[in-house]
Length: 185
Image (cartoon, rainbow, N blue to C red):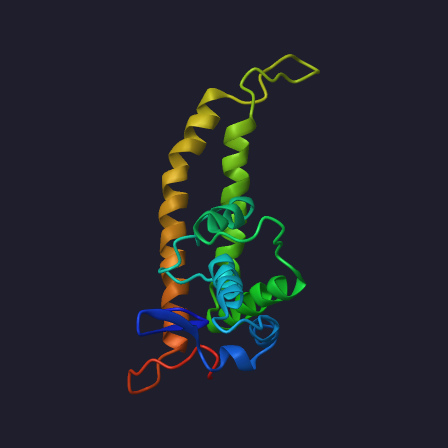
């Protein structure tokens, strides 16, 4: 299930609530074409950039890798850029999810920390030495222990992602179990 869209006759169309809320409304209305192809693409990109739903194939991408990966699947004109309205749309989606999930901000923080740890593993130098005494900065045991802890980090991250997804889904269910729009609270 999508935050911004519903599927009707095998075609993704925005939920009614989507085109009533800024900046989604402006993104929709500025596309004056009959088929609204550009607006659908831009709204899709915004959703893929921000959605924490398990159905989002791009949710686990690193921030710097996400937009290029999305643009491989949703080709845009060469001069197209993520403009201020699209950036604001991404922020609105993030804010809606944050309100829907008390764990959302923890997930964002954990992802950032995991990315920094990954970058550390990619860039550290085992030959680096302390300038004062010539001792190695990194001991092999410290590195191997950190690598072993990576499994726990990944497992805990997956649990947290599942919790966030469940919290977001719960917000869109009514007491009768019917799905309603994420924008309706």
